[in-house]
Length: 277
Image 1 (tube, rainbow, N blue to C red):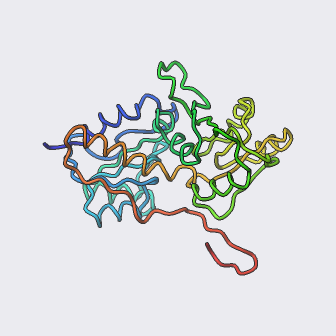
Image 2: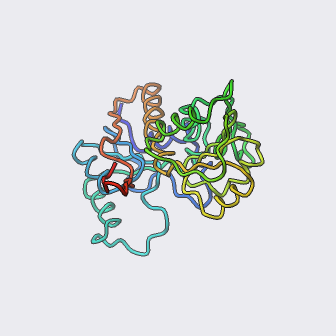
Image 3: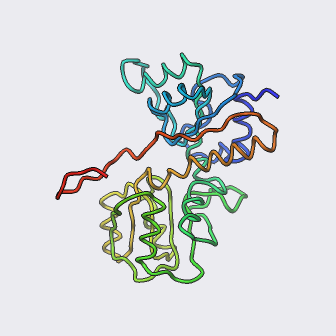
């Protein structure tokens, strides 16, 4: 059977309903034709020029990302800029671009779920339940716990591995043992007080603002910055799983690819050697 962009959108709307997206967000089909046939989907975190080039090299006609390629209204499309080049290359190569952003964050079995389960947490519930939603498992962030408390050293080692980082930024004192943790993939330091009031031992998110780091420090509450990429890179695998499930259920004969070139935008410099990791 022929699979179209519209079919992909309808399937994604069941897996991560677009109406769960925040009002300020931009999700769904951002570039392309809903009637276009889909043969190959490349999945990445960010719709960059490098990801478009990877799609072209692999013959993918559709790109599915977590972060939207068009986030704010564009006053113009200047193809001399990197942003303009992305759209020009996508359109000239007939590549559609779909985004599942905060709808995937809030969906049941969404981004924070995979982050929490990767850390070994269970008994998950939303940190901020979706307003007016009858589905109890939807909402931003997740709160989870361990059956038995784990030593802080064990938790940090696990977090470093899951996030793929050599170091972590921490504000507030580290607890000796960890029983409960709140996580929120992406930039969610605005929810620090919510995490604190939930009674967890640690809050793991990213792009922690200075004032929230101080707020946590004053309350002896531990907040960890796992970087935006680190806390959300698993969204690529998650989207691949969801598209794969849809393909199996609907007998879609499409190729599903995960980016092999995308990497963390930041590197770490060490004073002693000035080498990059």
